[in-house]
Length: 181
Ligand code: CTP
Ligand code: MG
Image (cartoon, protein in one colour):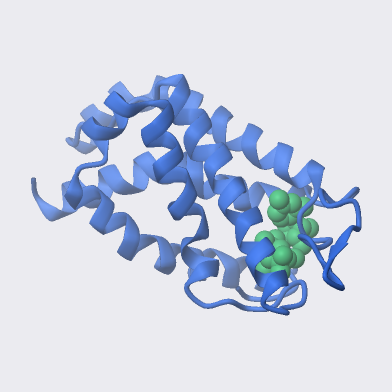
């Protein structure tokens, strides 16, 4: 498979996992998931992980997967690359996995004494990949094995941090996010 083709498929297949974090930033606020609770003097998750942001993120990711599934045949024709549609397990696995990974990252940040908004290089950029891919593999095994070839996974691991840094800097400049990471 040509490199460009692999990049197109990787980006397309990861879109339902990329969008939830940005949707959460836009919709976030309200009651934090940890309800303000602490563990060992430190917040369990912190005020940056809310029910509303999480729900909005998962909904946005699943909705996008549905739209992309309808668009897949047309886009495949236009671009000349066979982009996949999303089975329900893949839509949920990618979207919910992305939010779960982000929540897990905040849990780890709090345990390591990092305040809300603190940077955690590496984790910040790949947290959602680490959970969304295994969860998708679990919920939609056949689909996952077909779409996420070794090459696609490799591209995802390289492409995701670049996209993450870029979109967060844009969100920061637009005043949507408090920090550029
Ligand atoms: N957000 C949310 N719910 C989530 C994830 C994000 O409400 N599950 C919203 C919050 O308003 C959050 C913002 O999106 O402040 C930015 O997300 P993120 O950078 O992940 O959170 P931080 O505030 O930086 O907190 P943390 O240090 O825990 O990552
Ligand atoms: Mg942050």
